[in-house]
Length: 254
Ligand SMILES: [Fe+2]
Ligand SMILES: [Fe+2]
Image (cartoon, rainbow, N blue to C red):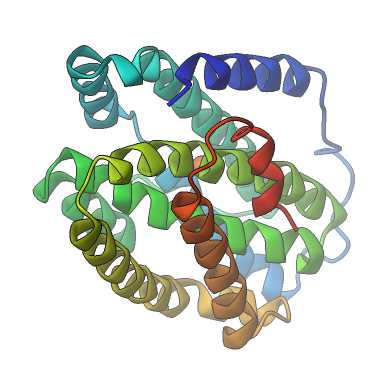
């Protein structure tokens, strides 16, 4: 994995985003609408999810980089990735406040994701994180078109593009990890990943479906979008191509 290219990628991103601003003070189209209230509650859950400290992930990255020279620089790249997620948390906080919602400190589906990540080992931690990224890619992507407020749509579009980069970053990681595994094990990994990803998608729809539906997003739209992101990810992991993987961030953008 060429972690040093990812370090450059995330640093360039941070520089680029520093010049961006959003019209938080412009009036909402119709603050009393039910879909805006439901969306605020849903975004507050994603805000909580994006606020994680990344301590376990960074510990795993440090250990891996120490064991395998192929992952040199991975810890620094993960640190920059976590910072970009925290920038999303800050944007989501602004979105929730704009829509009149309340910032959360605890929530059941977020707690489930965190418990699973903690309980099943560090590499599995990255896989659960990846499932959340693919679902986030679908969620923000759909809201970038369907949210009932142009400021929310613009902010979701920025996050969607970042998430596409995150998925490419994780694809690079898993491509190298799976390349070192026997074929049967890599195949088994894909089967279990697909099953767990579908389960995670069902849980997220159960939690966020009412808010998405209120924005005109159906269950099939959500699942199709998530499935497309997952299929693109598995396709990218299967390829033997390593050079140019950063450019492959565009594969996850639509
Ligand atoms: Fe994010
Ligand atoms: Fe992300």
